[in-house]
Length: 179
Image 1 (cartoon, rainbow, N blue to C red):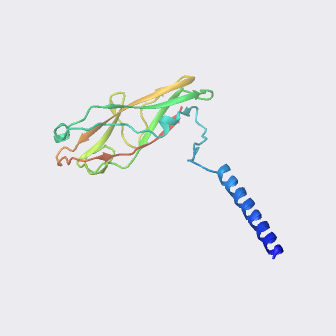
Image 2 (image 1 turned 180 degrees about the vertical axis):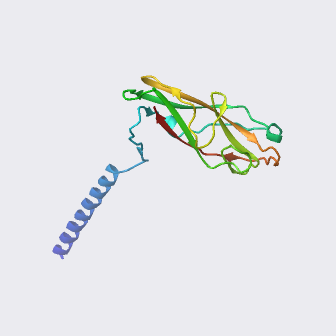
Image 3 (image 1 turned 90 degrees about the vertical axis):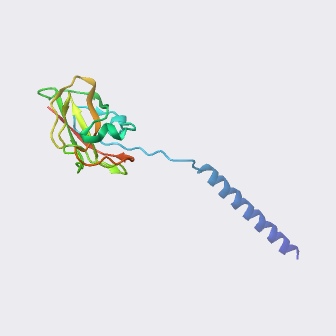
């Protein structure tokens, strides 16, 4: 009988040791969250600041009557910030920006929207001129170091379609070409 208690005590001790070891291991590997690092490497003359790569521009809560019959909202700035520009090898020391996206079915030339709002599109400008989707902008001069490319965006209502209140979003991608 004594051997039975000794063996049982050894098993309890072994199980307790294993339990403490597993508990210590799980504490050492506990995680409260994650950090994901993303980016890309390209051959352009400048780096694009992280806040400019994927950005959100607040266009505001626009009154329906402001957009009726082709009306427009107030333009908001859209900036692409460049850093560490090295102009070695560039002839003109300029950059063009091409914006692409799904076109609006309600507003010709506008970026299409998704969501509950209807009869609207997002227009973009550069230097006071409308930007045509898929067409490079007028070249902008850049210098060595940091530069900011400036554009504008506003909501425009359809000329004849009704304006339907609701939330919306729109997405455009951009590509830079250095000269």
